[in-house]
Every structure is written in C-alpha cells, then in structure tokens.
Length: 448
Image 1 (cartoon, rainbow, N blue to C red):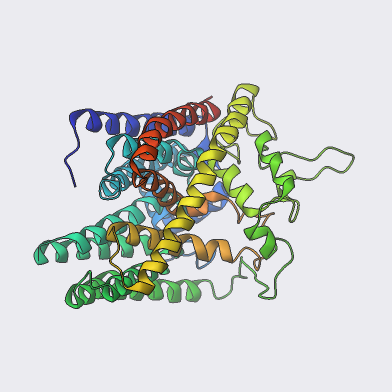
Image 2: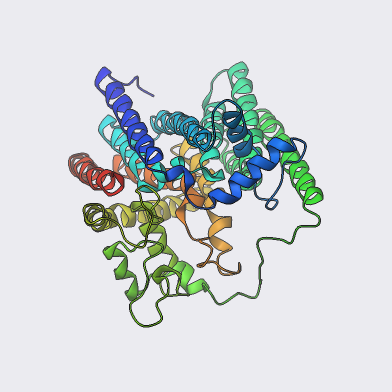
C-alpha cells in the first residue's frame, strides 16, 4: 500500500471539507428535523427524564442516538441542541468517510480513481442527507467504517500484536454499533464468512481467525443479544411497530424487488417522496404498490434527496434549480449505478469461482468489505416483500443501507482499476470526469 502524495492528501481533505460544507448547509436549512424527528425527539426527552429506560419505539431503535442528542440538549438550548447533535454526527461521518478512503488504498492502486471514489460516496445526496438528519442511520456510519477498517487491518497485519489491537478496536466498534442500530447484530456474519473463505484458501492462520471471532464476533453478538432482551423487556406492553407476512404481502413482490420495470423510466423526472399523481384522487407517486421496482427506487433515493429534507420549506415539489439538478443527477448517475451493480455482481461471481477452486483471493480486504456490505444490505432488502407498508413507510429508502452503498461504489472504482491496460487508461480518464460532473449536479440539487 503506497503512501499518498501531497496532492492526493490535499484532494482528500478538500473533498471531506466540501462534504462538511454541504452537510452543514443542509443542517442550517432544517434537515435535522427530517423523517421521524418527532418520534426521535420524544424518545430523547424520555431518556433525559428516565435515563434507565433505553427503548421507546421498538427493538430496532437503539439508544446511542438519544445519548448524543441528550448530551447536546443538556448543554444547549431548545431545538438547536438537535442541530448541534447533527453537527457532531456530521464530523463523525467525515471520519467514517476517511476510513473508507484509507481502506480503498488497499483496493485501488490509482490515486485518481480512489479520490474519485471518495468524492462520489461523500457527496451522494443519500450520504449528506442521512448524515444531516437526526435519526439512527447517521449514528451507524462511523461504527461500520471503523469495524471494517479494523478487521481488514487485522487480517492484513504482519504483526500478531498489532493484529490483536485491531481486533480489539473492531470489537469496540461493533459493540458501539449495536447501541446505534440493530443491523449490527447481523454484521459479524460477514466477518465469519470472510474468515471461512480465507481459511479454505489458506490465506489466514487458524489462530488469528479464532482471535478475530472471539473479539469481533462473540463479544458483539453477546452484547447485541443482551440489548435485544433488554428492549423486549422494556417494550413488553408496546405493540410491535413492524409486522410481517412470510407468505408475502403483495405490496412489493419478489419480482419488483429484483427486476427493473419499463415504468421505472419515470425516475429520470426525479420525483420526490411526496410527489402526487395527477387526477381527482391523487396519491403519492412513489408509494403506489409495485409501481416502481426496488432497484429504481434505490437508484433514485441514492442520487437525489428523495425526501426533500435538504431545503426549506418541505413540500411536494422542489424549487426548479434544485429539481433541474436532480433530474440531471439521475440522468448522469444511471451510468455509475448500473456500472456499480455490474461490478458487484462480477465480484461475487469471481469470488465463488475462486472459492470453489480454492484459489487465493487477490484482495482479502475487498472480500471482507464486500461481505460486510452484503451482510448489511441483504437482510434489509430481502425483507421488503414480507414487511407490511414497504412503500408507505419508506422501508425502501436507501438511508437504511448507506454503509453498503459506500462499499458497492468503491467496488466500481476498484473494478475499473483492475481492467486491462488500454481499458484501465480509458477508465482513469473518463470515470473521474463523469464523477466530477455528477458531483456538481448532486451538490446543486441539495444546495438552497
């Protein structure tokens, strides 16, 4: 792993600074009070008055967000305290992005491509908006990035002492993550899968694998199980918020989950979450069951501020400058989205072929990051055909899978870096240019 040049370091700092500028502008414009703010506000106030009670909504809503919000509330005044909490999470988000960039140095040899990858994931509307809103999704970003960074360094380290330190740091990150979001309870499955693959191809020792499992799997899972039991005890008399039908609800079918539709072309008009259909009985366009496929909604919510929380006032339509930029963001972004999907699919096909043949993996770090991303993404996506109100309550929103999206897009740039020489040269020339244009439209779409 080469040392970054002075120019690369300055570009990274500039991108992270731009991320903070955009995010803080959204916070200034009221993004803190985005989706479900009233619910999170009441939970934070409840925890302030009764610190021993950690759960107010359901077992998936964890206390870390409310601890940070409550701390800010104690030392500031009124609703501004929640904006202050969002600023804290914005800084933590910048740290998370830096860790993803640092990890990408093991995956992408071209400085141009890895700086471009950082620019894209940092300035995606789903990144800046998720970081700005006072909700559990923002609290999950740093623990995910730190866990992946630590385990990857543990696997790659030549020193047993350093490896132990990295494993301990991963343990802390994953334990903290369980206090941030329930999805962290599933994340160790990605670590176990990676270790089994590396053991099969003899790319890691059994001793180191056992150490990683003890610290980064057993301990976080034990903490997650304890938190789940505590949540169930505190919410024993509260009706469950999420309801499932394992035969399928019919609201979002398996076909809708997996396959695009011709009607998905409407996403290039960049409709917002509250955009209504025309006619005497209008309904929310994006909430019509099976009208849009999940891939189309995932794409739309990644490249636009689909909830419209970045500007004021909130409403059914954006101001035209931002709406125009949102349309352009989808039109340019589709190339990146389709390429990322293809890169992820190709990576996993190649991985399973190598695993079957017991061939060494070219990048142990990429295997780990990809496994963590799928452990985060798959349970959330696969539940959509079975959870009630998949459209109406926004279970499809990409804010739920931001850490996985970061990895998926880094995978795209890593794939471009591994192309044969003529194609790689073309990719290094074209992909950063496409990224720069896309970033300009994305920033304009959320800047008020």
